[in-house]
Image (cartoon, rainbow, N blue to C red; front, side, top):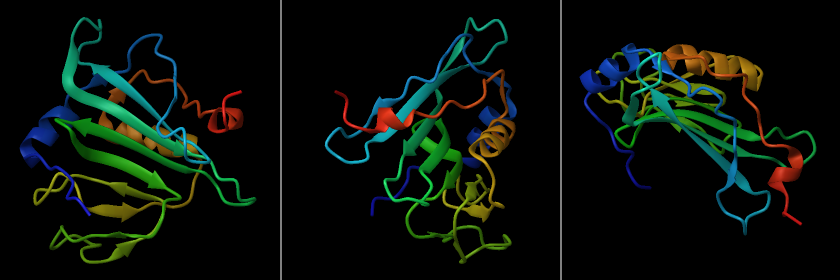
Length: 172
């Protein structure tokens, strides 16, 4: 498995600590990531403004969402919410994925070297901007979205709008 890109902790903190603004009027326009797979994985990407007037946008900082519906009754969809800085996934919330996350980084942190199930939140630590996660209590997608926005210091985002079930089917 390829290693995730990481960036210096100080760079992550500088970007995260600065308020970022959701673009006015931006709607969730989900795109099919792999039209041959069923159900189709869907992605969404949003740039972030670095001033309230929204005249300046962060060049290498954006929100990336991933959604994959399930055809199995009773199995919830997979969702991932990520703050990407300089092409590195920094703060992220994952729910209903495959397997478990192993915290190989984070010596001295509460969940170091533990396998973390879903849902969980990835947080940057001094040792690495990516790779350490802590468990979350089960919750709704909207609760996770609000937590993600708070942790990422993003202001003005709307309620999350997931793809309709028909969007994850073949387009006719």
